[in-house]
Length: 519
Image (cartoon, rainbow, N blue to C red):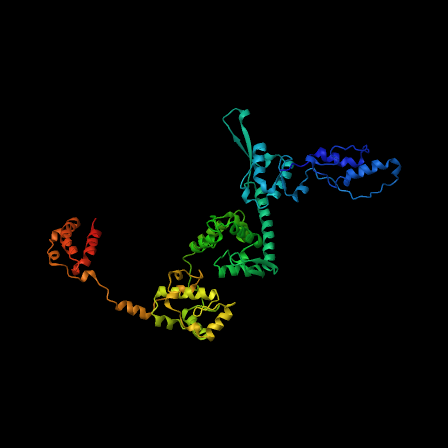
């Protein structure tokens, strides 16, 4: 908080140049310094005070018909006019000379409630708080406050001297609502201009937060890289504004070892990385209001956040469920080749591409090795990881680029053969290398594996003929599970004592069968 200089002090500074000269060593009060010891404009030797001392030292003989101004003049600070405050980082009180830093607007609101009994409704929906306050400061100086505000009387049953009147300023007043809408539209225009500038800006330069790779040109290059390579998607580039500040906020959280989604703090960087990967927390928390200012959607409609706008869209969608969707065309989800960036909307096309372009026949490999679904998943994740690390999965030779790796594997035919099963058939490859790998969703069991599974002899306990003593169980006991259990246990004890008996393996399944039938 920094109060403005009072009007008398400012007026004294304005009169200083025309006053009499001061003796040597004397100092005029308010002429050399502003309020609270702040130097006045122009410094100790310049400005109006300096000119007064110069003219005083020269004496009357130095004055002619016209006075020469040999130094630049500067007026003192405004005693609190609206124009001076508009370009300053301070916001004045509507009623008095108190000023507060814009970042401390809550302190100003508290001051106006306690000292002046003014309550402003829905302050968070005011797009430009300083302009809003300055407007009403001018209007309250023109007309009484009761012409604009609703009066709320507290302690209405108490004596008159103990009652307090509070004034509510809200958008129920048409003038207030119009002002808020105009400020919102002005802010939207500024944000759209900023977003348009960032959209076509080619001087963007930043580093990836996950792999430290540098990107220059347009911001979309970095955002698309993080979405594609690290499964970190913060939205389409065209929906984001103030991208530099947004990335700086996210980078600051990572530097502080804080998860971007759950916002927990970890002891070291590796623990944070493992947490975000395993918990799939490579995304931002949509509930964090700190990120709202970086998305265009939060500026579109007056007084509505992105959640409210989105919920309205959802309600419109539910209302239109009975519409005709016969002309709907679904965009197919494309799967990416294991060795290059080629995409296909069907697995058949993708397999054909890998066979013709790279010599990798996935259906044949699946059939020859009898790979089931889970083994296919591990194989795909294994190949993805090796290609990502630019390493041949047969000879383990490492290359500088993916292009050099693929050329080596195609020339040496290493691409067509798999390494030993123990190399890739590991539990760690259950986890996808790329979290948005659509190819994993299209895998299926091989026909040979299905036939083999169906041909296996699976023992069925229900087909085994029970001993004669069990077949003679009275029918009236079969409906009483407790009685059945009490009769079966004595029969099963001698069976358990004879380990060589073929019925020993049925003892525990029979007990479990009865226990499951208990009420």
